[in-house]
Image (cartoon, helix red, strand yellow):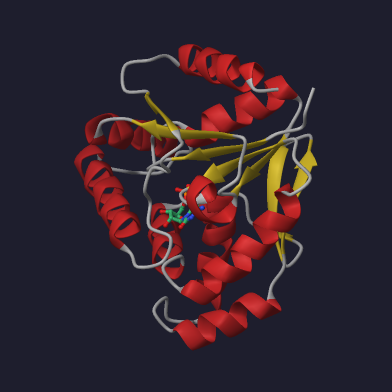
Length: 222
Ligand code: C5P
């Protein structure tokens, strides 16, 4: 069987993270959460007092930091300059910071290079916004996951609440919509479905149903 590059793109709350993780586990592939990289840059900018629209400072920041993934007993961890930031990058504030710094072309170039080096050998599931369009336009399999805005907001709300964060449903839905609008309308690598991506609307599907559909498609191309 060939070791493929599988791209999973889509808006926040569409099920990308959950499905990418499960799909990678089922295929015995490596899962690469590219959103976690942009979140890490956002956190680094926040800590360094770098304004998320200061392209020059962001470019320098990207040259000076390291982002790695480590698999441990506690699941997959994200390391920023060696520090475990897996929890720190998941707050609503860091979601918005990630979206803002990710509009900077120097940030996208630096992260894109990192993603290419991590994924080029195949046997990977990469999850993000521009994997099938920009980072790996030649990926053998491309998925574009979708769900209604209300459902995506509800999922994000449940996820944050499960972590013990105090959040409001309507506000969470509004934030998800704001971030998707920003991601879709930016100049560099906007969130858009690749022509050859297969769209799956997960609004009223179970995780298991989506996973089986994705597995069927990947297996048909291996
Ligand atoms: O997927 P996640 O919600 O963790 O991503 C956080 C933010 O990072 C997104 O809102 C988006 O602005 C940015 N991102 C991106 N390109 C990717 C992955 C994430 O611009 N490939």
